[in-house]
Length: 348
Image (cartoon, rainbow, N blue to C red):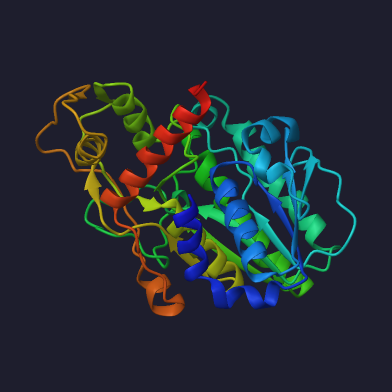
């Protein structure tokens, strides 16, 4: 992590000047995205002497304090308890809002789509109500590549101007539809209230703090490999995915917040696609040892391969963003961190 935080600051140092003495409000600040935002915020604040502060909304401050006491005890971070749909507005002015709270549970999306929609849209509405009264200058919404719907097999990389969408008649479209509505709400609200809204359409990621027991395939593969295998693929291994390392993710999100034009979407992810089987094999290589990779079923012939891979030309061209840490290095860093965390937890 220390080297990763140095990496983030090296690629964002000139952006932080405008944040000097300013206040941030962050939702979702204790999840995977939030951990990286808080770690990199704290590092920049310490290194550059910014005197900035962040107020972080979380459902369980006590649980976060146990998970990350070094962050929970910081004077420049204030944690408030609440649900993103109903939280009490903190007192004061906040120049920056990062709305990263989202319920990304695949199980919830499939089994309780109305609850998923309510969590996403209701949370966004509440954050926007707060934005209207707190003097916000810039608001970042972490949206998702799910807003595009199913990626056509002939489209190797999905660009921001692709106008596809989730199928509204499918219950499993709740997450993508919720993010689409959130983007629209943010764009309209920012125009009405005179602040800048930044849209980050996030794809797939890997790095320290990624849950290993959720629906993220690469996290499941790392869990299986560290346990000695086998790595279980719940499919035929042919779908194409790409992964951006978490330190690069933090660079991209801070850059979009500070520099992106208002109401313009940017894909956030890697454009280097791999099959799920290749991802599993890359995880096996990073962990080492003779670990089996097992498919739930064999690939079928004549079936179009599904893919979820962004085009990132716009971020490169307009914001000078790039994938600085390739997947093999990302996996080495992630597994090394996980091993060090395990040793720290189980050392006498």
